[in-house]
Amino acid sequence: MTTSRRLCAALLAAGQSERFGHADKLAQDLHGKMLGHYAAETLAKAEFTDRIAVVSPDTGESGSLWSDLGFHILTNPESRSGMGTSVALAARHAQDTGADGLLICLADMPFVSDSLLGQLVAAFCSGDGSEILCAINGGKRSPPALFGSRHFGKLIGLTGDTGARELIAKAEVVAANPGELVDIDTREELARWNARPLP
Image 1 (tube, helix red, strand yellow):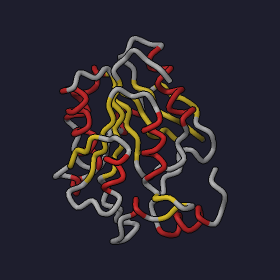
Image 2 (cartoon, one colour):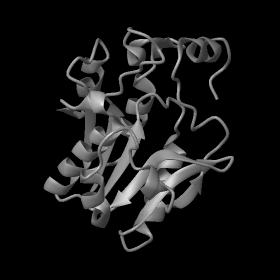
Image 3 (cartoon, helix red, strand yellow):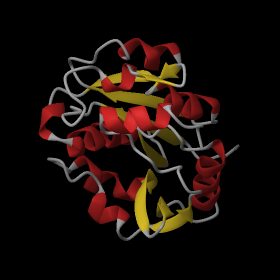
Image 4 (cartoon, helix red, strand yellow):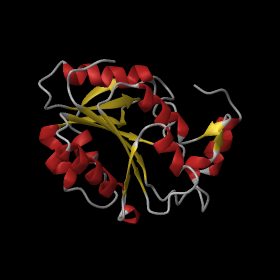
């Protein structure tokens, strides 16, 4: 995946994981690696101009993972207010660094593939750079999502827990394979995935 556009990849890892309990969800074992390692590793292998991880002030043992993989760490002091604040922080960084586009990925989505990211980037680069693109499977629109720089202002204005849902509702879509868009929210879901082969 090679592009002349300046693309920033943001891994959102500041969620409170209330449905999971008090443990650091992203540090939990999934088939021998930290849950949060999968999405970070996939992004680290791709050719983005810039990679950032947005974390909470109380990030647990998974915190060193992002910097070890070459991510610039942004701490979100308002992380308890919801995902919108993390998206806004990432968009501000992308704007300040002159990025042409911002890719948003969630750290608790371990099965996003290199291929899916490549398709999103290729679709973005084939347009004029103003698009919004997101993944879709079974009619469900989901991150990873890629936003052209003209949308950074709207992203910077996000608050609360709605994230970029309204913008994604208008996005062009790239089809994901079954299982790619799974996010792991509970201990029960993690146990089920540890009991079966990875997709």
